[in-house]
Every structure is written in structure tokens, then in C-alpha cells.
Length: 197
Image 1 (cartoon, rainbow, N blue to C red):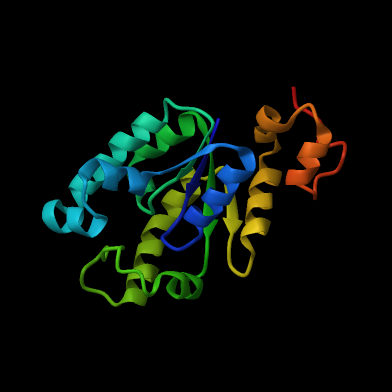
Image 2: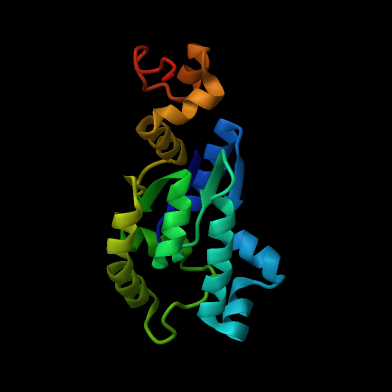
């Protein structure tokens, strides 16, 4: 099974994904990075030259391809959940974690990032975040298997939360040696750290 991270820009998907992949010995795949690689242009350039629909088409292609792979940590773009077929593909072989953060936290994290094109083109930065979150929240909720709030929490705490919520993923990497599980998720009890086979 894949671990799929969804959520708005700036909720910590990339940072959590990197550490999670390192902890589990898995490959990290960013859908945005794959789009950039495929188009050989930055995301602002893709959107400026060919529009959001073209960008979303590339994103859908990549989500469909990733569904046929296994043991990945997938860091999705904030709008990947806008198309039902993307969610269906990612959930086919993945557990979906929705990372959330307050508008204030998001503004603090991505306020200076010019590699993220405007989603509306007309609204202020804060208004855009509020409006887009209002629109997308039901879609994030519908797609998520688990929800994790990232405000005021360290990356290590967030990674441990992911692992604790889905202990079964450890089975592939750390069983049958319990001590290795304890090293990754120290909060687990000894009884719950046993192999789930």
C-alpha cells in the first residue's frame, strides 16, 4: 500500500513526506515535481502558457500511473482532490492522510513562495486561501482516511502520528523485530507493536 498525503499548500505535505519516506525506506514521489519533470517547465510557466486545465490533465495522468505502483509515499498537489478520478486512483492502493493547518499557519509558511501561481488571479493572498479552503474542504474530507492537524507540531510528531494511525504499514518493513518498530514509533505499546499478520 502507498501512503498518500493530501492537503492545501503549506500544510506540510512535502516536509512530512520526506521524513516519512526516509523512516520507512520508501520512495517519495511528488505529483507536482513529476508534472514539472514531464512538462520541462515550472508550474507558473505551465499555468501561464497552457492554463490550469492542462496542468490538471497532467496531474490526473500521474495519479493514474502512481496507482499501479506500490510502497510509495506520495506527496500530492493541493488540488489533486478536485477530480474524483484522481482520488479513486490514489485510494485504490493507498491510505490517504489529509494534513490540515489554519489560514494563519498557511500564510506564515508559504507567504514568500513565488513558485505557487495564484489559484484565483484576483483576490488577496489571504482571501484566496480562505475561499479555496472553503471550496476544497468537503473534497479533502471525502478523500481522507485520516486527518492530521499540523499547526504547532514538529515534523517528527507528525510522522509519528501517521505511523501510529496506520500501524499496518510497518509490517512490511520492521516485522518481526519489535525493537525496530519501537525505534520508529516509540509511543506504541509492546502489544500493539507486534506483526499484524
